[in-house]
Length: 281
Image: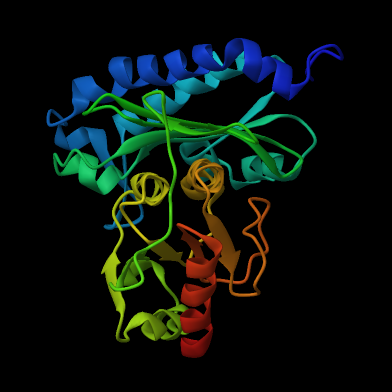
C-alpha cells in the first residue's frame, strides 16, 4: 500500500512524469518495433476473428506492469491481457489497493492492419475513483493526460471539450455491431434519426480524446471493460464533458452499469444521446 505519508495526490504531484515516461518507453520498446512488421505467428485470436492479440500487446503490458508497480509499491495492475489469461485478476478494480488499469494496445485491429489509429492507455484508480490517466498515440508521439480536479491536457496544452454548435448534427461514435447484444442494437437504433450522424468507433481511447478536444460530440458504447474506458472517461470529465449510463448515472469502472452508455462534450449532449438510446431500448 502507499506509505502513510504519501497519498495518491502526492504521488501524482511528484511522479506523474515518470509514469508518462514509462508509457512512452513501453511503446518504444515493445510496440513500435512491431508496427507494420508483425509476423503471422505474432498474432492470435482471443474470443474470435474480431478480437485479436499480438506479441506487442503482451510484451507492452508486461513492461508496464513491472514499471508501474515499481513506481508505486503496493499497487496492482489490471491489464487486458492478464485478465484474458485469468479473469479473477479483474477483481482488483473493486479492491482497496491503488490499481493501474492498462490497455497496452487499444485498437489492436488497427495495429494489425498497419493503421496508426491505436494508442496505449493507462489509468490510476483506487476504490472505484479515477485519479489520473495517460493516453499515448505512439505513431504521432502525442500524449494526453488528466488528473482529477486538475484538468486534461494534450502535449501540455489544456483541453476544453466545449459544446456542439446548435445548428449542426451530432457526430456519435458507436459500438461496432460485432460487440452488441440484440437489446443493445435496438438501443443504438435510437441514434438513427435526424440531427445525429452515428458511425462505428475505432480505438475507444482515441475516440475519447477526440471528445476532449471537441472534435467528436459523443460516444455510445455497449461494453464495460475498464481498460477501454477508464482513461478516456477521466480525460473527458476533466475537459468539461460528461458520461451517463442508460440508468441516467455516471459510468462506474467497478461495473454493474446499465448499457449502452454515453460520453459527450457536455452534459446536455450526454442527456440528448441518452434520451435517444432510451427511446430505442
